[in-house]
Image (cartoon, rainbow, N blue to C red):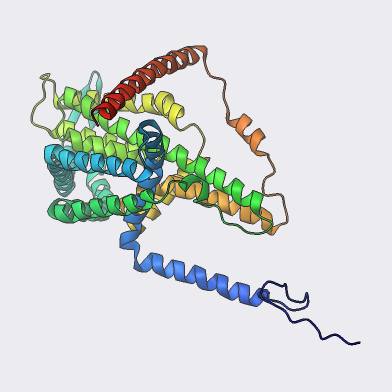
Length: 433
């Protein structure tokens, strides 16, 4: 007796020799990969004006995610309600800061740039006048005509003038198009709001892609990327805020003109190693030297030296005491490489490129090291994650441990008191209802 061959149904698996979806060959993979890279590069060049705000929106989303999670857990609100509360507060702070001091800061920055620009225009005349002077210090006599100051000032202007022209255009556009700047700020907040409102599990799924055989590599890359960006967001941006605040207080106490503008310049200088501090010191020296008077009745050169010395001391405190506490060596990139990356990124996408140059460079270094070792069939992770974490850890001083223990105890008491008050408010509210 012969039975007919059974027909395949939708729930039955097909024969092993029939391929439901054939694999791509090496040439197809190469063409697809190069096409994707080409599309990304062209899109980056063509839409580079909005790349910076979009990157800033992603950074803001990543920064606010822990706050939204903590607020939702603490108040028992829904995720969307917590996000709405945070962004309402952000909009209130943004409008308040713009009303109180935003326009004043823009005016300060514009006046500061105008001062530096006028000084560079008068630099040849100043150099010519300075070369005719003779300075006597004790038994020594210094004749300035032996130095070719006019030629030196001309050479200096050849390098400085293009930079000043570019910065002047940026500052001028910022001052004259306040509405556009405010519009971009709200655009960043809007994109960040939509990203955060639907991202309750953002850290777990942000960088994970299911690729067969590469589960550990992708998870390890994700952890390393989170470590880099957490270090940057927690450290560099905090350092920026502390630098601006400290410089504002210091220069206001000293009575230096354009204190908010110089403080903002000092904060941005934190993103440009080597070159950034010198730009701040030179600008501060020129402003303090040529301002009409000072609070202390000192000579201009004496007041200028005091201002520069105070700024150098403050920067040394930040570099040797404050910065290691917030940053350490988590990014793992050389300052010279950060300087070059900052200059290139600023030329491509503006001030956002300057701010994000360090973490983007650290990210490219991580991906490049992984790709290089895989190309040569080497283990991409020669050091285990536990060994790498132990190598980064440094012994905490006893005084720091005591302060930390005391701070945690105080925080637990405050949190317990807040929870008690919140429970009583809820109980009264439920009773009235």
